[in-house]
Image (cartoon, rainbow, N blue to C red; front, side, top):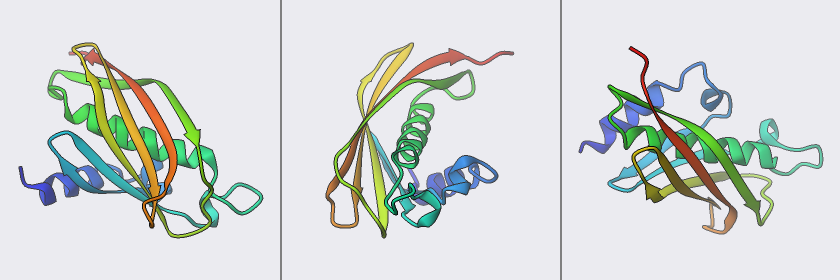
Length: 139
């Protein structure tokens, strides 16, 4: 597996999407994980000047959906997020947040992903879970 080429391909497919709008970048990949980062700027603040939980969840779903898609036969299958939950534990005002998605369950029709969101100092910011459904592509 050439990590650099895979990450370049994932990142290039995000042009003109929510991931581009939020400046989400995929930065690491392994056999059972994917990591993305997102800058914390005023663009993703809630009115009182800290990271908006919705932006955090968008990062979590982006990395969880991407790794779910990569784990299936993407020529014949696709995935859709069906449930996401998040526990926000700490606020952030600047720097980056990082999302690391790892599998809790990879079945034929459903998958469950754990996504831990951390800050630059590796503090746990949010703990998320994403359920995805594996679908046949329409021919």
